Image (cartoon, rainbow, N blue to C red; front, side):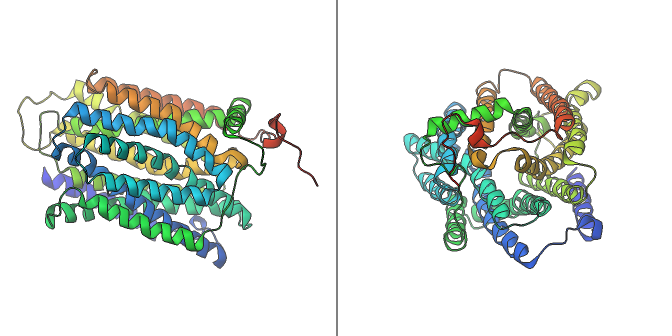
Length: 457
């Protein structure tokens, strides 16, 4: 069965290479040297930020277990991280619109570096503080950087279509290649060099510090809401009004929460799904295979977004249906393939089928990220971009906390079925978004906000 892993990885590698090398003029966007310089600067920073995040992921649970904490204590630490992202992260992330997106990106670096430092302590309270800091950093990572990019792109007068190129490249590198390299580098530090489970966190802090230095030296500041008299509660109220008054924004938030909620649930479920009888599976190699599938998806997305048809709103309906079907495989194989009762050994035939389905889901994830970024840049008002994006993460974090708390309460097939239903609902909402996407954009932020003062000429 070990040959099966190499065959899947090799096939995905060949397809990704073929897609990238076979791009023609229709699949490429002609840009300017100034834009290329701007794009490359952002991609370097984003890759460093994602390296700082990916290096930590595979070793968080392992580090806590080496400190002697049980499954219950570790679960509480993870819930604290998502809860912090929902509560404190929403507040800090929303301040980016008011205090500046560059400043928020620097805050991400500092907060995550401090979180990495706490991993040196075996004290539960210190580790809990680290999880809270990590939750805040996560909210900033998925709102402040994108908000800065969109605002700076528009401020410099670049064509709107070029933004999709930056999005797709950022996902191809940051969520694909960098994830694979980070996994290999972390394995080198912990296993080959025997530097201990804290080493990846120290390496992550170094990458974050380098990225912060580049932000300090080369990024300019941009803001969302220009008014001086608006406090945080007023800003929250305005963002809520924007979501409630514009169906496109509300649909986008619901679609994002449904997909990302299913995605994060999948992260907890794929290991027990592939090894229900404690089969020996190469977790690191499978993770790298998933990231390669994600690269395949982002490569497909870059081709799709480089053309005028089909539109993002159109092809994402198909992506959500495929992703829904792919997560039905564990349920289907459970009924059609007799489960093995032998403990240990290599991956089963049902596990092989599920792995192919999971790779398909990860390819859909690779298409989803740049596509949702493109739609957010079109529909979310600039003045409240970070605030609204963090509002979108509130139901997501609530959902993940509930799943984490009840992960042992339901059979794994029920959990996958729930995710599949969520993804199918996302496809229905996406169809509705497609139907109303040509409606005029919502009125301006200042016109919607009853407390906003008119701008003087």
